[in-house]
Length: 199
Image (cartoon, rainbow, N blue to C red):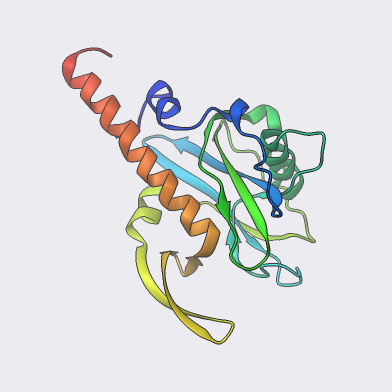
């Protein structure tokens, strides 16, 4: 069930109300972009370049560090435009998800959910993005699993998503989990209203 925009917005945080929390962490924002083709929904992710100092080769959402005086929502839109060539005018921000802390690099990531119109040809930043990954949202959901990963010499069991050989883990996986939970709530709301004839 694809939720209505109204029901989706009702289960997300108001983007205008999201401000950096006063901590020692560096504030960053990402765009959790979703687009629709027919009855299918796709989630927009990127694979980071191997040459990057932080999180090389990992799967992430387009995003980066906030540059004052911009708002966090403006950061997410700017970074998506810089990294994958997505014009800000093609994105409708419908809400935000709770912030997520990175475990090792000292960032607090503020995710913003945006519905994307016609997807443009991606124009990738050659220094940051190896490729765009746009899996079906249903395939992402089906790829969930708690897997053991070896990180800095330690073996940890952590929630992950495996889609077409690409492993989503860490802060990105936690953001995906939050998105899917709210998407389910919104879908149930829409389904209930359809059954009651309120839509």
